[in-house]
Length: 358
Image (cartoon, rainbow, N blue to C red; front, top):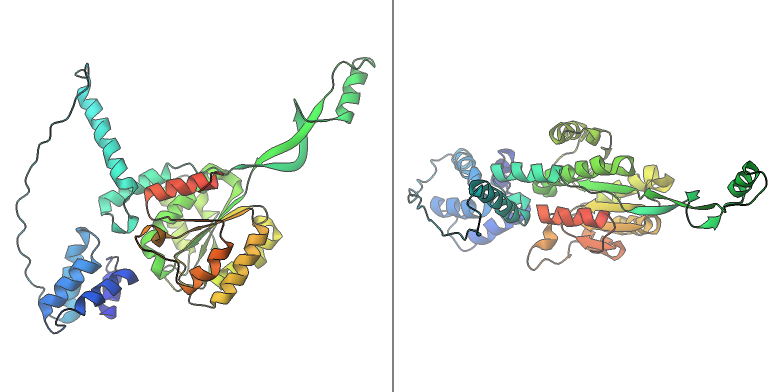
């Protein structure tokens, strides 16, 4: 059955490990020698939406060398009309107002939908909304000083201005620390377990890089660390994603978060990218390497960064607890633990990057 799930993933069906476990649990209550029971157990647990059903049928027939069971015909769709309240004086231009209300309602529905369970049309709409997000970094005070209306006295400029006025001290000039955007570093897990969410998170990283400019750095992590800042500089989201996909050599591979985080700190973080920065790690915490190494590197990152944010798409699920070895080792050094499973969760992540409290 695990091999069958691998075949489904190759065909585009999001049969992630959690769905595979649900399928195996369902088969524990059925006769595994009954083709119909196996078919329905997989269909009800491994498919995320209507677009997956045809692919599932083809894969089931090919993998088990038999005809897929006939599906019962669907009942005809029933049109339901609901009365809607129309505000007074809203007759002129009412159709346009109804269209705006319908669009807003559709966006509200999509805002809390898990991106792993969206249809193709819904995913396209969510991608468009992610591209419109603004994830501007918060501001920090620099050590460099600049002319200001208030602040500490600027003796040099005050003396020059006095000499320019013929020796008469008419004004006192001041200076204050400059304000600059705080650096933001995003490390996105692109391993196989993060496949349903990696595309949306990379699109969010593109929106952050577009709105944050040179203050934002993006890396992908799996079995190798890949810097994606240049690829995500494209203004067009689809072009940026195509360039990022071509640059990532380990898409949907394994997970070595501890080793990749160590490489990031050795090559980039210690030299300045992580110092005083907001560092966002987007991962489910599945670590195939040494969890103790991940914990040591997270402690090292916590000492360098201004704030460490971990976005785990599974956090929003009912009953979730950070029990995996990697997540348990990293969590003590995380300042903000949030989710990244939906459009609304990504909007909250953008607010956190902007300096808001979780």
